[in-house]
Amino acid sequence: MLVCFSCWHGGHFEGDEKEFLFKHTSFSKDVRACEIEGKKVSRLGEDVDVSFWRLFIWGAKGVYRVYHIVYETESQEKKFLTYKFPLTLGIGAIAENTDIIIEENADSIVIYYNKEPSDGFEIEQNPFSKKIYFVHENDLFAIKKIDNLCF
Image (cartoon, rainbow, N blue to C red; front, top):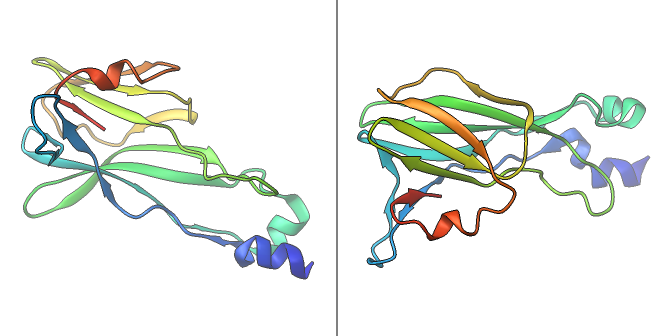
């Protein structure tokens, strides 16, 4: 039981700190924070706090790592997109997540991703004047070569 407690950090798993998405271009080495309609976009992961006894008795079933895509203006920071992946435990366990690429078009915002989250994506509120579309692609390598994408 002591080994499980130490390996499972007593039921506390740190989330990912806020990480800005960056706009990439092939013609410029100047990489800037991604901005959509003047709002900076970043990703963050919540901490997972669950009772050690719950993990020990029932395992990680029903426990998720929750991620948010956040936008911020000069005065506020708000979540606009939420998704989650099951918590994994054991040897070789990784913090499951998906790669996200955001493409801003004249009339829409397309979000490409490579791993399907549990229960899909949830748009809490669309702060943009454009519609948001989700496109699943197994391999995002070719898409990353397109200019002016955020990832």
